[in-house]
Image 1: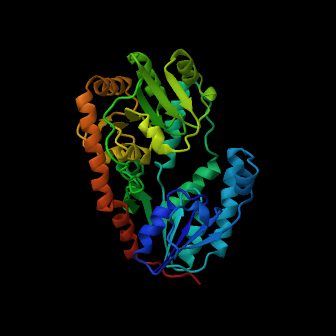
Image 2 (image 1 turned 45 degrees about the vertical axis):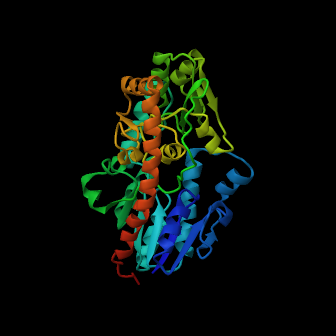
Image 3 (image 1 turned 135 degrees about the horizontal axis):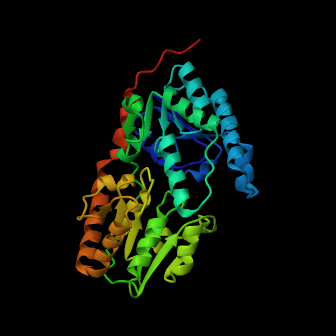
Length: 379
């Protein structure tokens, strides 16, 4: 079997391609990114660069464009890939960027799989709209044509890969039969012994980009309520908080919060943390959760973080409802006050990561794609 993967940027494609390569004859990747950006890619996997002008300008010239320009760029690139890609048995494309590629693949007799890590487009748009209103941020909905494009991708796909039940439940009934659950765990590896000594100050860490989807509002509110002695909240985020008035106000009013934009060594970030939190309102999977656990950091996550579905609440992590300031504050306080429990959860969490990694959940799910019946080619 020959497999082709179409993706603008690398995302988790190396993980996907390497897993599939063990079971198929050949794999090719079509992308704007050079091969060196696909870390640890098997040498036998071919890569093809399909340039996209806006991606080049962003990467090399560091220029920034409006969302509409990026969206039009994706459409142009997708059409180019669809025209250039030859015949394969299975084509995997990524959501928002694969409509033309999927149609072309099916015309050539290939099965088409759509990878959609995020929730159903309408669900996610409404969630972000609601969170923007709460924080005083502006919200610009996606253009109607771009929404329709995503809906058309769902319909065109033979299978839609989703990383969690959280993501799956947001899709409408008529698409449920297309969904295939493929948890993204796999890149997190144990980094050694659990660090038993607490940091001074006691440090709670969080990692993530979009402030609205990552639930920073509820974390900052919980943190301000707790006012823990000798403590610090460490936020690693590239998001510009000035565009979120309520978040900016909370940051100004809470002195023991440190915001950092770049961490050269992510393992060092986790070593600074006594506790890791993912207060996500929308996180299709949330691989950072298992990275933290692999590094021996006890963790808290919401049920809107797909990775939390692999935890046993109270044993290898704490799982709370998304958007609950009270539950978040209570969970943080419980591990701040109970050192024995904090260490026990850290040990159990690291063991869970090792156990799940050995189970090959993602690879096993991908292997189900290899049994897809290919449609007849259209002349």
